[in-house]
Length: 295
Ligand SMILES: [Zn+2]
View 1 (cartoon, helix red, strand yellow):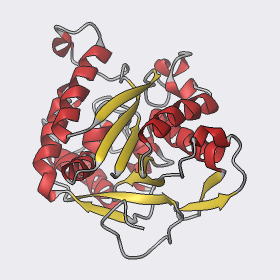
View 2 (cartoon, helix red, strand yellow):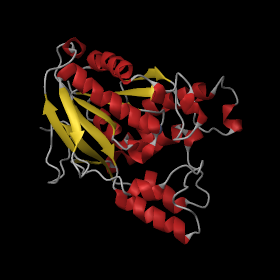
View 3 (tube, helix red, strand yellow):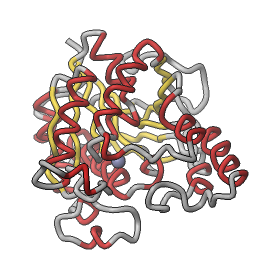
View 4 (cartoon, protein in one colour):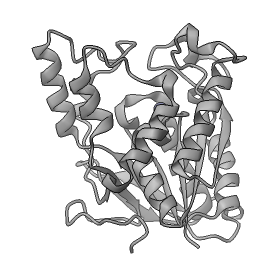
């Protein structure tokens, strides 16, 4: 039986980011698991949504349970760190913030989930954290550290952003519990859309360097963070599933008023989701594959 483990930072990354892919594989009979690094405690939530919930994390756990069911996941779990904010947020200074975590501690905790599920494929964030969120970058770092500790696989970066792989002696082979290193992919998205979005914002008189409900997303910088894709998953057959799962995260929806174009460009109508292959090493450019499991 094929198994896929997605390791991302927040309750909603599994739906907004790669929900189509998770739904696609769950529908195909793959055992799909989600490991969420944090409980999304720092997410901005409108006060009225908190009614009936003990806390932001309580609300967001309910949303993730809803999304997990919609996507057909076999399980979801939390790595147990606290959500950090965007760069410069006071939440990042807390001792329990994921960004403050010792990377070896995070990698070892991750190892426990990896050997429990024994995935063939592991998905995480790219080195830029997609749009630069510090927790996304921390997921990436913890994953790379796990490969180094458990399998002696050192993953680096070529100038074009693609991965380079070198193999040496594992630092702590017991962590792998006898399983081979899973194929590793980073979730990526075409920056062409971001460039269009930045342009569209300028047309409407908005600053693309201060986008999002908290004005902390710099679209101009994000557009420069490009990575070669290797796999393209056609998500049109499951687009309604992705939409339903995304709708579960009602507290994290972008306010659509005034920005329907941007909303559509980023989250909705995309026909595919893309992945850059980190391990095994893959040529930077070539024909896009259509399956994360294919050699
Ligand atoms: Zn996130």
